Length: 196
Image (cartoon, rainbow, N blue to C red; front, side, top):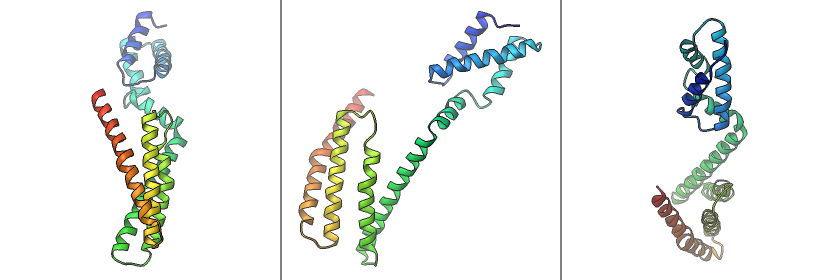
């Protein structure tokens, strides 16, 4: 027994109300559900009984689960890379904080921890700041953030080692932060608040 056009339209409408956002995936799922319902109908079930049975077998936790699992399968390497990046940034921040605390308490290893943390943040932050599809405002903001961080890192490292130029680097980093990054961040927040 085959499905009627009305049955197929009903299944399509059912999927249109589902949380699945990909139209291509919706079409594939409609095809799969139609084949499974037809198979059940050939075994003697009517459409009203076959469709709920197929839906419970196909997606016992809801249709969104299918899209989520597909995303995880297709983006596995990207997800691992993101986890590594954010873990690296977390370690860099922790090392910086531990180094600052150890420096204030005059403990051994403070300079090494602080320099490692600041250098790691300088390497890790670009991985988070620069993403594909960024607008010019976002790129400029990320550039100011990175430049400011680099000058502040260099200035802090020079300050720890009592080298000349530490104050100049810190002042330049703070000027870039105050006149570049912060205003662009406020502009971005303002535009987002108006858009929503």
